[in-house]
Image 1 (cartoon, rainbow, N blue to C red):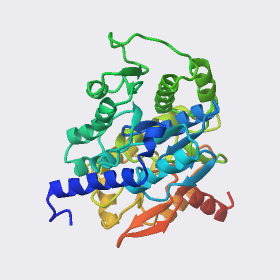
Image 2: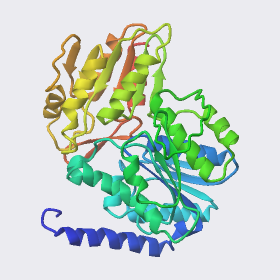
Image 3: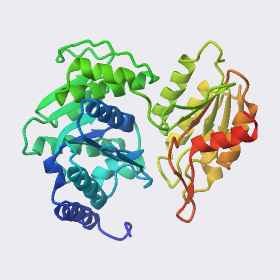
Image 4: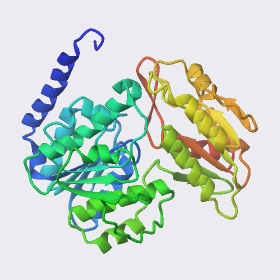
Length: 410
């Protein structure tokens, strides 16, 4: 119907749904401190880390991400195949959190959700920006529109009538200055490299005992700043973050010996390269530098531009590439894999195409040698695989790995 309905009618429809949802559930966000986390990568991890920081201080917290819905001690998987739920479900979640006595609600905020006004009529007290790289370009008709959509969260923060609002911005990301201009209140900047003169530097010593990769240092710094903004003591925040564990499907170790199998959600070129870099640099003494990657790309017309980019990145880091299904939706899976492979020019490694994702994972496990690392990307802990005719197949990369390893007596 989108092809035939005028754009302003669709926008009115989405806006009114947001309003009706808030009215029906009594504008629940007004009774809580709500923090929105936005950016291309790292949102779920920051939601998780900030929630843990606040929970460890004794506060009751609700959090919503691509992985889970959590209200206090009650937690359930996000089975929607949608990071930011629709307006009614979102307002219902906030209403349930308020009734449960939650002081805080931490929400993962997406550009598509903002585009459909899902953030409207939510009283945000703080907004956190993680980073910005190319994603959802087709859906937003260009990177600038994608960035503008993210910026609307900070606009909403500025327009909010309440005082004591704050924004947390990644100073090492070039888009930080863009989001900075939308909000004139209290701001916290974090980074590893930025030396902008307008920022008063304050160094902290942060050691992450359970989280790998430079990107997780950024995620932890974002959570640190938000925790400080919310009044948690600096030493307390650092103590909690240093012991924080990883979250499901994000650089999650599934098998440790005789070789390593890791599952990760990375589905953009930037995230994929950072995962490969992390695994290459963090190998232990009994590991080789050999990466075997199981790689796909989302179908349904989503971000086709990134397919060859991801193929080239895999070729730069991996000894063996196994291309396979991710979420093909209605697209031809073979065409998707061909597009991933299209610009790979370095063939000093093995490359194969196996449409069946289970078979691809099994092949990787059967061919791995002691010390190798298998990295399976694109889905993380997602509970479904979306195929043609709007069908969803129950799925979990982690469970498939265990099942296939068991068949091979590993």
